[in-house]
Image (tube, rainbow, N blue to C red):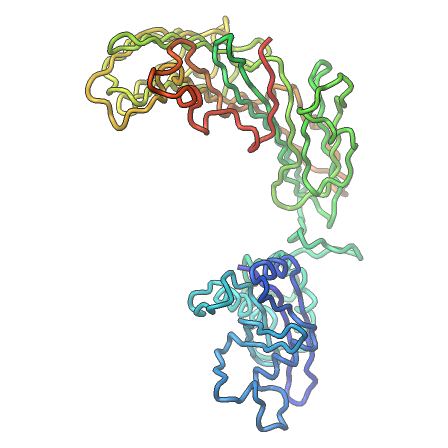
Length: 514
């Protein structure tokens, strides 16, 4: 639910009627224009809105006994959801205009109706109406306090606080909360000091101890076939996430990424809109172009003015010579049993300290798993016969040789559960690896704690972290037949979409094993 516009009107008997506060949300208005299409009616000027609203509420033209738009018996007023008939070159009706009149104030708002204008939906079906009334009621309690007629100075001070309150309670026109009943005259949200204007995207200010957290996470994906006729694939992409609690309206923070001397340059870099300036050479490095060895290799400095909530500062890809874990999977079928042979080798450049490391071997589309006679050189093996799944828990370390093996046979019995499908048979059988390595990245990229600069009056506490995690890390069976005689080749070799290297959903770099 969102609000297109909001008005606070002062109306006292015998006094002048005026708009004390108004706020229009251009992003919501743009959405309203797209939803309504040709039947879109723009919100008119403030003076026009004031006159139409007073007429609809019966508070204008008191000397006239009859006003057609107000008093005609064919006009059925559905208070507090009013209709404002706009008399403009593009005539139309603004609906539903919500209004609450209490004491000296009239509070009104125009919620966004996420439904076709015709036929008009019932009010009871519109969530935006109930939430809009809740917002108005909360603002009424905030402005008027517990009484119905506050002193002039108290009302003026609360109206002055309203812009800061709405930044927190209704950022960009989307109500998140209502002011607390009986709110004090002092603002509950820190307001900017001096003449510096608080941007609309920043819903409040931080007060307290300055803290900056920077987390670097790299994700590796791999497709290993163990076949010279098919090239192994892998890619690495990283993200830098920040959470900055720093005082000031637009504080300045700089985060620097560094690479080892022999590290490959970062590519396909995308940055958050809050980044204020950036070297053009950082953004031009692309994994699609053939590198000529002259690509920018850092350090990569990102100056920015952070929002209050955690956000992704940047993302990137990196070319690495080999995947972190090399694997070989051989699955041979003999009558009603399978011979399994697996070898996994941790590359010497990878830190041998895992938070977790597991290998899953599914055997779907077969008879029920009966006898499992499989031995592993390291870790523990769990056989889930109900799911036809082997889970090899490798623990937190590889042995000193950095190589582990699995050998044995699996016997199946009983009817095949469900429809027959070629997946997980022959060349479509696979191992999926799940692992996380703390305090390490495959590209060598890191955030030095001392390189994080915060331009603030108070010295901040800075915390940095990094990790490497797998995603869609597959090792395919290297033995078996290509296809059955009556099956098309595309079906046997393609596999489901979720286990193929994705090209568009994430930044991707592909390289071949030399």
